[in-house]
Amino acid sequence: MLKLSAVFPIHSTNRGISGVFFSVCKEWQGPELKARMVVPSCDRECRGPNVVEAIPSFLKNLYYRSPSLPIVKTEKRFLKDLKDFDVAYLWPGLSVDIAKNVYKHNKPIFEEQVNCYQSKAKRILDDAYSRLGLEPQHTITAESIQNEKEKLKVIDFLFCPSPIVAKSFQAAGVPEEKILVTTEGWSPQRFPNYQFQKPPKEEVNVLFLGFVCVRKGVHLLLRAWELAGIKGTLTIFGSIEPAIAQTCSHWLKRPDVVHFDHAVDYSSAYREADFFAFPSLEEGSALVIYEAMGHGLPILASPMGGGGIVRDGIDGIILEPYDTDAWVEGLRKLSNSPDLRAKMGAAARQRALELTWPQVAARRREQILQKMKIK
Image (cartoon, rainbow, N blue to C red; front, side):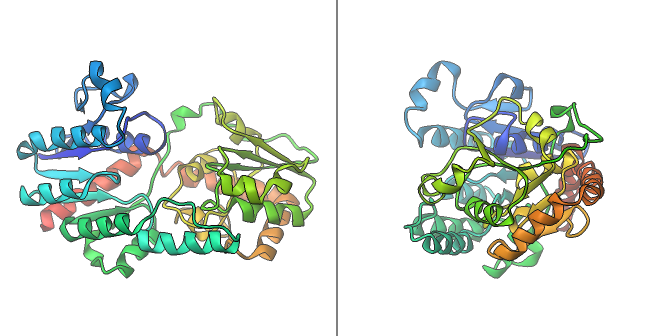
């Protein structure tokens, strides 16, 4: 049996990116592979016999006063008994030193890549802000790019959640045999009230869900929505980046644009939507795409936004993010054709049912086992 030790750098829940970590690793408990998870701390529902919380509960308030202390403590706890494990599984947000330390222990390293190679991501985002006449407001720096380069020197294998992410690392010089193309996934159990058929209505409801930011291309969606002149509502869920608030206030004030900062239950947002729009400029493979497809929603997305899982013309329509005319046409096409939405939505639902977390984790497990046999 292969023993794997995985480490995640921030407080963990069953939602978002930490939910990905737990959803994958908790499935790796079998005769061929067993995973241990080391985290700074986690919600009660995440705890279990294979989960190690590095920070004692009575010290959490002290440690979380500093952004770096939880990571330092977690890395030390992870390394403490690494000798008892065969493989290390690292997540973004950890230091360069931990990768180098694992390398010194002569343990194979698998690392999760949530987004594109940072140099490429920076170019995309710098260009996006420049088009808006703004200084870049992302967090990618020369130091973070250099840190990524240093990590890549010692890491054995990279999990890349989409073909575009994989290509960005290949272009950076990472050998193809080190790259493991995979997907993210979703949990149908979180959304038990799926509607197989939607009642007919006169106006459409188009949904965007996520951080309302330049990186997600929300400004491009708002512009296309205005030009499309559709009878309906563009519903946006998510916190708004200052850059979007500054440049898109006139669109956000439109009566046919509705914005909510957050929701207790996003399932109702998916159920009330007719299709999902996601023109992301830089992305890995967004979890909201899996959930939207799981709710039977056709997807209107950029190549990045589609995450390598939306099949153009089958589950939805893939469009270049800056092609405004194409987005206007795409919005109108899906809005004006209930039959097309029903056909694409049914295909999206079936596609999503192949991408639940147990299935995704099983495929990743086979990738790990195969690479370890080769190594």
